[in-house]
Length: 387
Ligand SMILES: C[S@@+](CC[C@H](N)C(=O)[O-])C[C@H]1O[C@@H](n2cnc3c(N)ncnc32)[C@H](O)[C@@H]1O
Image (cartoon, rainbow, N blue to C red; front, side, top):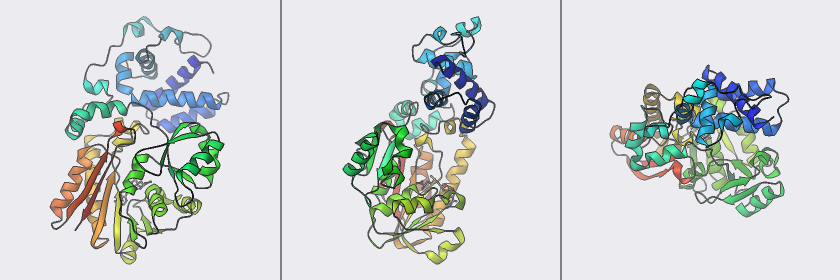
């Protein structure tokens, strides 16, 4: 496909997303209809689409509209390119620009437009991050790096780097965690790399790894991963210390791949349904990697930025408070309750913790840390509580 034909494909996919289709679904539908597209084409079209979703607001301002054509016109203008080299370039290129399209568009005006944030959310971001809100918003406009966790139960970081290099994947150590690598070249080869297939490395953001590094895990401890999901943190805990891990999730289906992942990593993890928790406890440590807005990972899932509403945020904080309350009942006296989110919003972080402490006299926070998204990882928060 020519570069202009890739832009036309992105326009069609963005129009599908604008009509209500999920981004992945719209991309898969296009790929099925476009057997002529090679892997390089598919990757380039995907990048166009996700770049436009991350920067939907500023591209819409620059392109003079919210449809696929306007967003891609905005993208070209934002990059300082020549729209006429793409629109009307012939073949499968987008049709030539109309006079109205040529005359339309303007620079983004407000900080929230420049940072691609919804209006309602901007004051909350400023309240959460103060002068860093702008930097965080701008960080979320860019693609996320690919981070790996080295499974130290299997090999050390240097050995993993060499094994990956043998399969054409270049990495460098990431400062956020002693287990973290950042892929600098060859990320698309990862799925077939031997070190990935045999469990020496896992895909995991460096801040996610750092959240686990902070847990005071000791051999023999009984640990509950209360919101285990796919089990990324449960696997990281298992690799760090000989602890007994029980994984739980309100939607057990989310844990369906965990047994195979644990096998691959050489880890032992017991899956538990909610009704079994009382019989399996109490635990020395309970990790609540709570459901949240995902605002710290909107580089990876940019649709979430535009889908979040005030009502949904309020619902999420309610769920987080309920989880903290329930999880605290699973601990031995004096055990550690570790709360984490991949959110950069105070509402879900310090405020959810403050609410728990107000409702549970005798409990106190013994540690708290944030990983700002503008420092090269997903935005993350963690708090350690004990009662
Ligand atoms: C942030 S994700 C967990 C990610 C996972 N810990 C990892 O590292 O891969 C949050 C999980 O919480 C689960 N969840 C939502 N509400 C819950 C509840 N009330 N109790 C327990 N888990 C819940 C969701 O199903 C989701 O899988």
